[in-house]
Length: 97
Image (cartoon, rainbow, N blue to C red; front, top):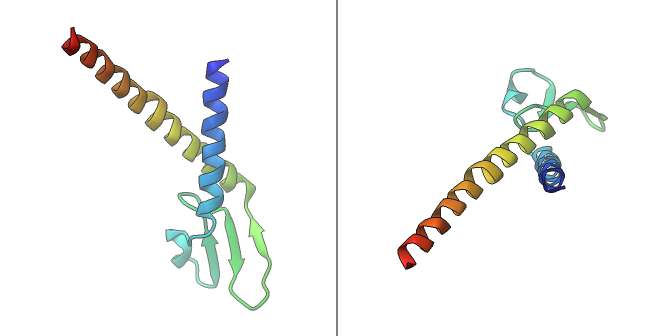
């Protein structure tokens, strides 16, 4: 059950960061003239630059973005931070003896 909880937390974090990244323009936005791309690291929103243009959502880029941020969170938090924290608590116990 603990593994499922970690996975769901990572996916929720990835979804949140992906939605926030839709606010900012993508670095690739300047490659295509006349199209504004949004989302980091994968552009998942595009809009042709003219008044009242509809926003097009690229679902494959959105899914890749969620997977990217969820894996970054999972590796960064659960693998690195938790192991460092566990090792530092063991050192504290050894020092206090």
